[in-house]
Amino acid sequence: MNAMPETVLLDGKAFAARIRARVAAHVAGLADRGLVPGLAVVLVGEDPASQVYIRNKGIQTRDAGMNSLEHKLPDTTSQAELLALIDRLNADPAVHGILVQLPLPGHMDADAVINAIDPAKDVDGFHILSAGRLATGQRAMVPCTPLGCLMLLRDRLGDLTGLNAVVIGRSNIVGKPMAHLLLAESCTVTIAHSRTRDIADICRRADIVVAAVGRPRLVKGDWIKPGATVIDVGINRVEQDGKALLVGDVDFANAIKAAGAITPVPGGVGPMTIACLLANTLTACCRAHGLPEPEGLTA
Ligand code: GUN
Image (cartoon, rainbow, N blue to C red; front, top):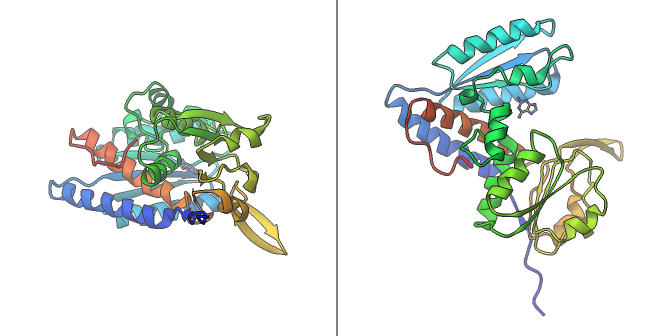
């Protein structure tokens, strides 16, 4: 009897490093024309997790040869002041991408703030026009985390046509755009979520499982069809044996026994998000200047 082939660990850390290197190479080519892509990041308040994200974004943006323009505002900032800053960034030709770090303080209307960003600079892909374009199959800025998941899937599987894909989670940031991206790849897509009935049976039919529901180890090993590709977007802090631990939405230790390929947490999808943010910023810069877009860095 043949042994089961080894499960492939999808190394997002290494893959993200390759993407950043490709972005950096393209950025170096733009520098020869005197063009430097600029990413403006806006943080309102002092959320510690957001500060860590922003620091990492800044480092990786500069490492790729792009300008990182950071705007840190106190949490007493009014929405009108934030909107005035976004107007200035929209009008600034040195700024090709604008990212407003979420969550925003409670007194702000996040939708109104995001929709004030020039869609051409919407490198997060959260603007209602970006979402609508993606949903209708038009060229769009694609949210970074689902774009990273798609890159991992294409790299592993090549053509995704006809595959059964289950996306667990229906957020605007990951679940819904992920489902649209997979539809555009001609997958048969099911969106499941915390209220879905028979979620185990739905998963068992899936060639691709993307878990983005924010529930630690929700997806059990026996939900995974043998050979399926499992993408775990979850990053959940749990306590185990008195120690703090990061775990995904998938019960990794058991899912790995059935999966053909699986992303670990950490080191899977996580590093892909900033890499895709850099890719989107480069794409936005090329589009703004009517230059050819880098290949393989967009949906
Ligand atoms: N907060 C956590 N992740 C993200 C992200 O990808 N973009 C923005 N704008 N805020 C976030």
